[in-house]
Length: 283
Image (cartoon, rainbow, N blue to C red; front, side, top):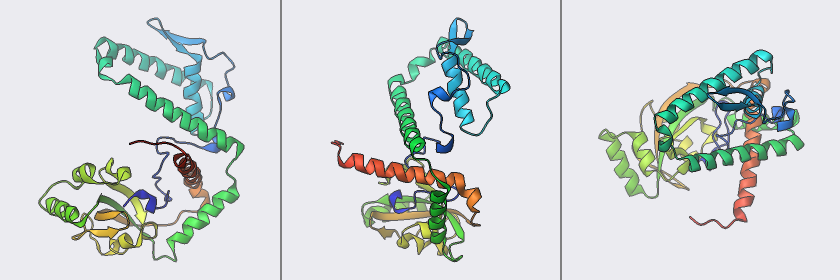
């Protein structure tokens, strides 16, 4: 049961393509937005001869300002002290030979991809800001899915998805004998999005999952798994109900950050779909 069969977001949790990026388009800043006009290559401190640059300081300041903090002299000094402390620890780690245990090329590649993704999104939404009208439209769409109150329960569920019923029944027997659900999900689930989290899907409502799954959730007890696998268009699913709770739909104002992120994810999903259709991908 791949996550594409769920909404790209809920009011409380966001599961999707940009989980590595915390983007607030309304607050997105470019390099030139930094309050300090000093060149990025100037030093603001040195630690045993290693420079802490103005550019590194500005980068950390922008990250906090994008999260809603005010750019003040006190904030700048606190960040500078934090960068000094990190450099001291990095130098000590190098002395202990720990650098050789880190795969720097892969780490740098991942960091580069994340930064380019962030820049791509910021560039788009700087020219195409998300209006209150668009947020309201998304809010109304999600609220409609909640129904007339019949969907006022949230379920925290995990899943294992396999290709056939035989494999699913075998995994159910293993779980009933004491093997850990999360471990088996990580090892056997064909849903790549959830297997990395041990099959966890987070909090969802019945209206946000495919009908075959929604039908079994109300009868499940906390901590239980489905006694028989659920057949879905994407495979045979073993469900685990981790928890459930009553859900009060938040107001439009309370939901704005999550709604904004939902629209960002929807845009990114459309872009990725188009790029994949024109790309040569070999696996």
